[in-house]
Length: 339
Image (cartoon, rainbow, N blue to C red; front, side, top):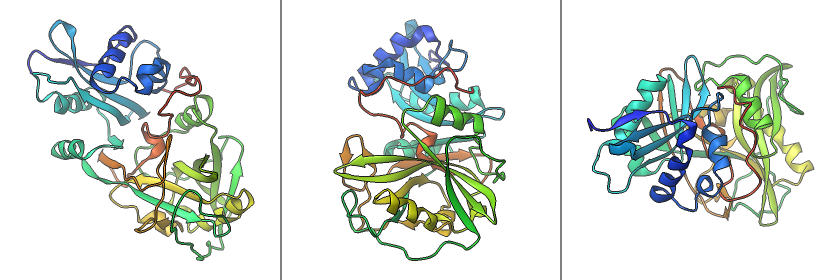
């Protein structure tokens, strides 16, 4: 490994990076077919470098690539995306060394990944990451036909009397209590990811307790197979402080004929989601996780976490799980990225 160097790639490396992904990942990947999406996900605010780690071998040949999605800075929190080594590379440890280089270069207090396969999870556990498979929580609209999911249980547990939930038009939100949970994304990141640089039309909800805003929820409407649902992709604030607020979604689901509201999350302790009033998916219930293309089946996503503090979790919006998989609309603006 002495002949391999690690660092962040520059904008001038773009063509070589895309060719590497086509040859060693998938030639039909969104980034290969439309590199503007690669810029959207990884190009840094300065426009001159990418948030990624590359391994360079002889003659500067790329031996490995680890995509980075910065979530916070000073101190840094990051999520990871594509992680790939050159096929038949003579450097057998390049995958491990990419993560070691990530820690040296970014010095993050939090590293989260969602959508990690089992072999990769085992490797990351060797590096001190916690790992598991994602959980899915939901609330079923009892009045809507089952067009997307199957055998979802309905909950009649009421919301806390002191809880509230209402939709807001933008992210000019009141001060929210700090939960201390990682990754600790700033509001500026939410404004870029879900407004100025959003790949989809997102909606924003505030959960309250005793009339005070406690939690911001980011969601989007998803349609398939003649049905529609609401998918929560991110949170900001104090989930526990919001109390049992999830049943407040039921009138919204009924008014819009939405089948359910759900969220996918990974982490070592997810009890707060049940306490909030969401129902954990259990067999034989089928709750789709892939909509592009739509698959009516349970697909658990592997997660890994390495964090200096707790509590912590990883949500769809943290990584690369909530963007198109196929060619669609033009890539959104990346230039307002906060870091």
